[in-house]
Length: 328
Image (cartoon, rainbow, N blue to C red; front, side, top):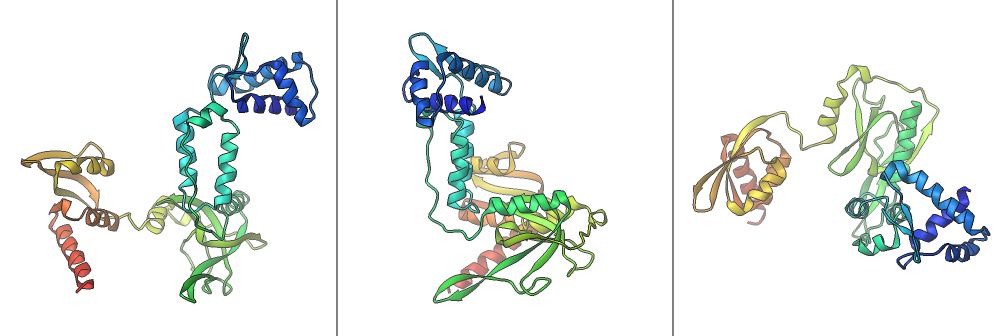
């Protein structure tokens, strides 16, 4: 029944008209060397609806007199599927091959009519030397089984005016890094693994997974020293250069047109006071003073001015002057 259900569902999903009759479904099934009767088609449709009912709270397939079977409710809402597909295609650490495989799996649950409504973006032509999915799967299984992993960690050398990927020689054994992995985290659109490398006693090590190659489990003793650390604190310290322990209330002067940018970064809880014309004073409390914040402010160039704290204003001046010196 499973094979029959699959192909009946596939045929209904791929139907390019408003509906497909049971008789036409029987004809299409012959292409897959499946020979059943109309009663079995109806039974398959009922089983399909039973299977999806608790997920979508209704029948996914309906029968309409004189029209036939058609998809009534797609498994994903249009917006949900569009968002997921876009997240895949624009992820910088995914190989194009992996992107296509994952997208096709998602689209196998999407009707022909829904796919016509989607906006399909093509992946970039960037070539990657690794599979993020394979790396993640290997590490996740190693964490579950408390297995040690070895890998190469890449660096780059210049060859014929182009960058060439080479393994770092700073591992436990030359180019081999050996760690007991504890946790995978995601920061700044990259994945990291936190674990213990016995080359660095009594501390945790963090590695960006898109920079890891030839990951495999090895028969070494798994060392678990997590209890010695506040893992949440370690994640913030080691994986995100934008996290800062220094927090302060900052005030910015900006034009009205910049308010949407400020809301996108800080939310709507900011205090807004009109100064003159379309200039506003923005007050944001308890904000980390970090490289990420400074970089964001510099990106806005002359559209925003730091009023307080003075230390942040001075740091902005220092960096602006340093940048200006590069062009003198």
